[in-house]
Image (tube, rainbow, N blue to C red; front, side, top):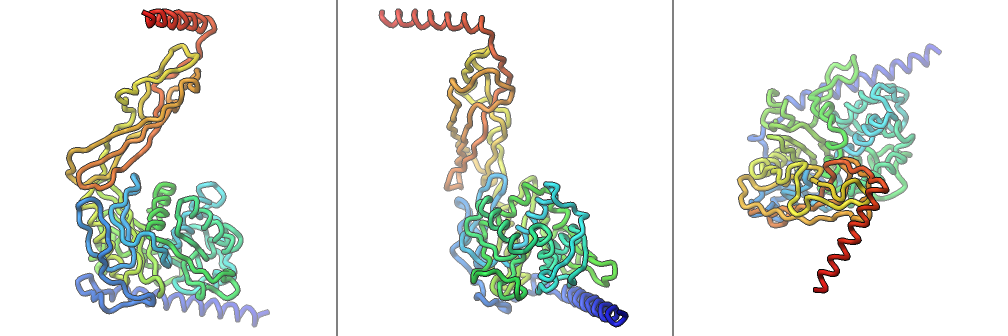
Length: 462
């Protein structure tokens, strides 16, 4: 019995020493990083082929986009969905650890729905303990909270923590992968396919836990931006995790996990990162494998406008951040979000709609929400047109509540410098309630309508 305990303790001691050694090496590596000005982009390549300076970059309107040395990229404004820049945005490519954004989303959904708590304990199984690559060296049987593992995943891109969370949600990683793919389809991620929760290549997954397929995980830049948009919309507290600069996973660890996202605004005070720190940047996820190269989904907010950028296939770790800065600068320097219709706006020519069987025969209506579009800074001569789709009068039967939907209105916005018009549809709603009319009122109204129609018919005869 004592011999068994000795072996277990000795194994734990070796693991802890390995963790400490890796973290110390990580810190030493970080302190030796070159600044942007000293980076030689011709040095690093990756298995799929180094990115080259591309010319197939599409900007918005007459504003010229920057040159980018990447395999794929996109820049979007999430509230409007407008694409401001794109480069091979629909080419499925290996996303590496950007895959973890879907795992992060689904775990956060479990917490949001009350199926998990951040304080719940997770027991590490064999699959997680054998995961390679970025990791925190979890041993089978270890227990950590959901929050601790989530931070290790979001900040340190830990594959073992990611698998442990996936198995906690769905029982097995492959059952979790089914949920990932189903969710991707619901989000409209048309060219994405997951084989695991981490983004590792199939060959790098633990033996016995690889999927029964020869496919690999792929994602497009557009799909990655879509996923990031859902995270921002459905889990606006994501910054509670993504802005953590370092995290000590175990009390006994001598060195903390360092956030792989060098562009965090808070890094402006860190000597080796200040050249990369980007004003307003607070997420989202890096990724790297030999096949994927260096990838990064970033998001930043300035002056009330948030942008999401995705770069894929950069040829080095620093390069993915310098290219991201180019993409984001293009957006923030040249565009702004402009509200073209305020909420509760009366639509000219559609001020009222008829109501059947009410105390009133018609009810005033307004737009439910504001309408905003992204336009070039200083753009003039806005051209806003609209079309309405009103519910037939026969279907608008009292009683109607205040704020009842009675139709929709679609605005199209066209301005100088933007080739294609942007569209947005919002509901038309009632400004007041309409009560049901009594039978006596309905009788006299019917009589009035009858004689009105009769006299109008006689008038038309003459």
